[in-house]
Image 1: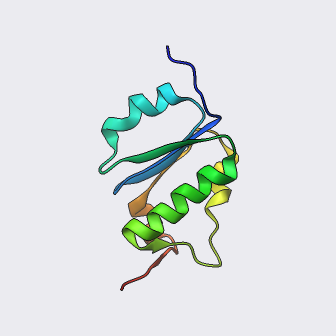
Image 2: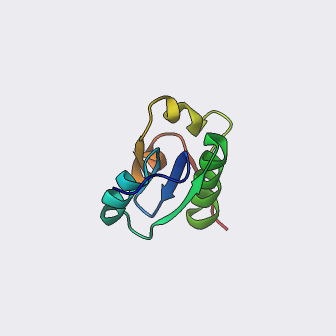
Image 3: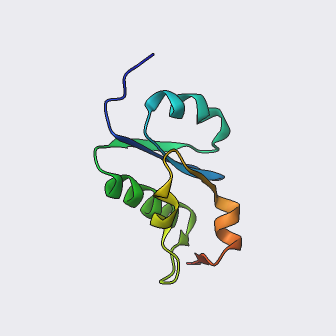
Length: 95
C-alpha cells in the first residue's frame, strides 16, 4: 500500500467530484470518474479551490453566493455528484 504524500487529493470529472485523504482510495475510485482530473494538496482550502475552480472553468457549473461547497467537507472522503449540483441551486453559466 502506497503512503499518501499529500494530506488531501482533490478529484473531479464530468460526473462527480471528491476530496480524499488517502491516495489509495482515490486510485480505487478512478474508474467511476468520467474525464478525471486530480491533484494532491497539503491544505484543504487549496483542494477545495481546485475542485470549485475546475468545475466552474471546465463545465461552467459555478457556486452562487447562497451555496458554498465547503459545507460538504465536514466529513472526510466525501463525494458529490455533478448532476446533483446542477439540480440543487448551483448556477449554470453559459458563454
